[in-house]
Length: 158
Image 1 (cartoon, rainbow, N blue to C red):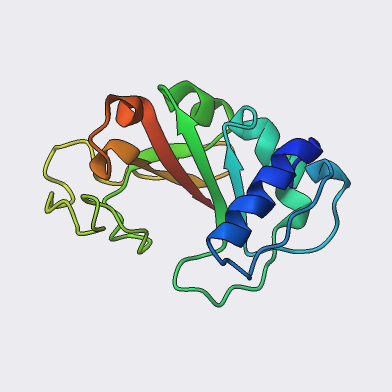
Image 2: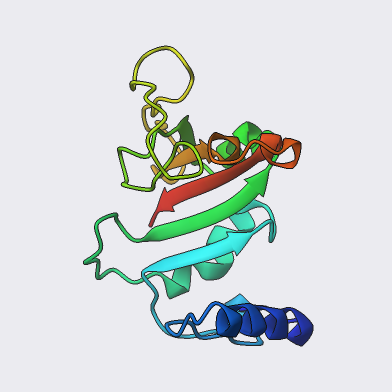
């Protein structure tokens, strides 16, 4: 979903070249959509609290996947303040909690045990706000290129 048709055409071309058939592209604004979705994915769209507000009506209560339905966001920089402002506790995930693979380019686990004091363990939910908890995974755990040093995957269950 994007309100800019040119971006949607690029996604369609990539999906076609990669022979991905279980994708639907829509030129529209998220707040004008209807329907229910198991996962809502965003890439550096806006602040997390605004993105959650604009897309919450699209969240499906029915879940049958290995991980709970939720938002999966690709973000950069220090997200502590942004997630806190949205009332979402943040912790660093190892991928074991949700099944989202982490590790090197092959998807293998990093081998860092939860609770080892590395900063990659999940934090406890916040006492206020939405009660949601984000799992933040560094993309640099998959890729060595300097561009990815500040990039993260943020998973927030609905």
